Image 1 (cartoon, rainbow, N blue to C red):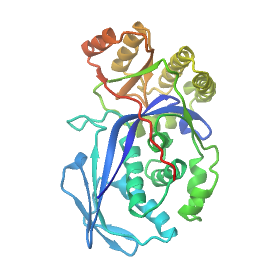
Image 2 (image 1 turned 90 degrees about the horizontal axis):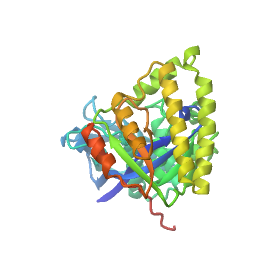
Image 3 (image 1 turned 30 degrees about the vertical axis):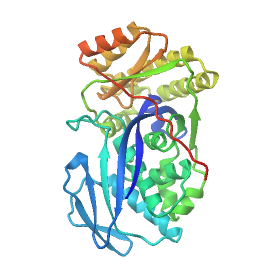
Image 4 (image 1 turned 90 degrees about the vertical axis):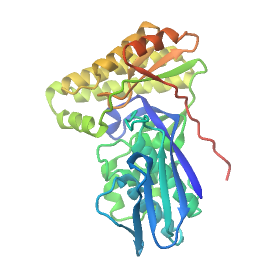
Length: 360
């Protein structure tokens, strides 16, 4: 049996702006994981997930393609990851096999409600990692990211792929979005291997080092949100004069540049300041696009964190899910956790996850 895992992610800043090629976001990988186990099989393979009950979906091969025993299944991201990785494997001379895949996720609560930690990105990355081991493929973090991005761009056309970068690299990262339209055009006439070897326009994934005194705190509102739906609403309204979309992008670009510089210089206070700046940018964008990015619960989460000395904002598309707060580690957070709990906000005991790299 082979097992691989991918971490969940949280956005620190850059939401909505990073949808546009050339714009950046800062994300962090956290220590809750989605795990994929692979067991070799003979004639029939299967896909099973703890998220969708334990009853597996059976599959067989027709040439190089997977044929499922039923038309409806919840494994679109998994199947896309399999397709891309196996094309890459075939291009590297590997014979394709049969296997059982079992998926277990810590990215939801016990009742199945999502925390907003990027389960679709994590399952894509973890599936590619486990298949790479099965087919004896060595993948750099960049190659892993590119394979995952090729698997995801057709399924989630509005996605920035920032979640994939966080899951592939781990730790704190600055991610600059590539041109997804270019990628779709190019892949039509190129092999997967050729696509991986290309320089992708605008793409940059850069690990960041957090200041030693920076402490990341996460609160969950208890209300799941649909990132694709919220992003689609903003995208549909970005041409309206009231949305001030170009002004938002210009402000976001300046804010992210300043925040990345603050990471480079180790200034927690400057990072906190830019978090507050980005919260204001998101608030203005939500008002202009008539989209509920910061809900009352998220507003309460942020207000209480600010009251106790933190800098806080929504994480991700908003509309529910999580908020983040950044503190100097000298601050006693007990009063904050008590205030959040009284307000129905659940503090999540998450830590930053740094991927361990072994020399090859």
